[in-house]
Amino acid sequence: MKDACGVFGVYAPGMPVAFLTFDGLYSLQHRGQESAGMAVSDGDTITVVKDMGLVSNVFDERTLKPLQGHLAIGHTRYSTTGSSTWRNAQPVYRSVGEAGFALGHNGNLTNTAQLATDAGMLPGVVASDSDLVAELIEARFPSDEDSRSDGRDLERALSEVLPMLEGAFSFVLMDTARLIGVRDPHGFRPLCLGRLDAGWVLASESPALDVIGAHLVRELDPGEMVIIDATGVRTVHPFPPERIEPRLCSFEFVYIARPDTILYGKEVHGARVRMGELLAEQSPVEADMVMGVPESGVPAAEGFAKASGIPYGQGLVKNRYIGRTFIAPNQELRAASVRRKLNPIRDNVRGKRVVVVDDSVVRGTNQKAITKMLRDAGAAEVHLRVSSPPYRWPCFYGVDTGTRAELLAANLTVPEIGSYLGVDSIAYLSEENLMKAIEAPRAGFCTACVSGEYPVAVPVSLTKSVLEREASLDPAPPLL
Image (cartoon, rainbow, N blue to C red):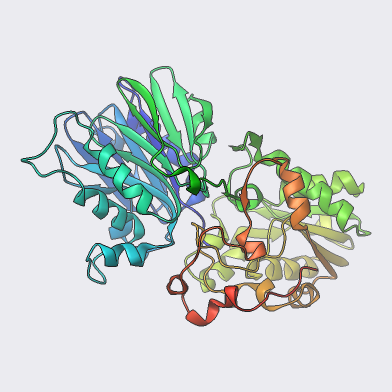
């Protein structure tokens, strides 16, 4: 599973926007570790700095100090469409109009190929869906002779391009004077608006507001575009009403978002604790200790222990200098990084029946290695409890899981998964209990990865192998 990206934007005259953007991106580092970048405007020009690596690798005081201005956007990336190269690092910049514009994208378009064909672009010209969107916007800027003087060319171009896009997209964009945020009609990926004393902020997750001293105003609505400039904040609705159908990714609550993030007005940590509580009621087990897989499995483990009455303990220690294993670029690195990332606390698990609570099982790389670690450390029994339903279908909306052949639950029944992982028992949270744990009954969610029901049609050409696109043809194994 490859994570979604993180986007950030700030309009704050008189404040050090580059340093604010750095802090905002740092708090969004979990959403992408391939590359980082920012664009800063001083009112006359836009300066873009980006490179491969973590935010702290790309930026330091020497890099940030010259980036003077009142407006900036930033991006942390993991590739879903387009390869992992410097060329595809963001923000994307286009030199058009008075001083150009810059764009950062979180998500994945599902009609990229069709859009490129319709625009007459040759194969290989467009590096990523973000690059394609920038090309489409640039093509709709007026020529120098026809340029209007009100400075709203980017807004007008966006209003023409956005209705053409399908799939998942949360954008931050800027020209020299304006910050713009856009959320797709389904709201697959999060985007929120924050307020500073001297300005406004856009971010994928609310902790990016907290870290710079801004307060959360609200989450952007699906299909909403906000324009921030010297006059304040305006809202535009560029999509027809019939396309608006909220479908926030349910795995933002399960795994992707930080536990202190607010989504649908709920703090993610509380939802994860409730997942564990419901999992304990749904799938009880006799054991001596409940432990969570750091970091995102820990809240559910706390909930499981509370509801079951089984003592909670620490069975694994995490190397905090290792990033998320599921967004390592390939399977070999994922497997190797599990042991670098986690190690058992032997005195805590020796001779005990342990319940291991994890947020999800995708390929099974982590869980298989963890089970072996615990057995080698002397655990008498290992019982796996997963605080989400079986992950059976690829995501095409900003979390790239590869082909269906790579997903453990798409090819094995739940008992077979337990045997493969080497655990004494295994159980998954039901989809019904997942929704119950989030406690947002009137909200809309995308559960395609566990249900196979895709809110936006997915072309066969989007998969790595046409043979893997049996999602619309063959039934998955039943939920157990």
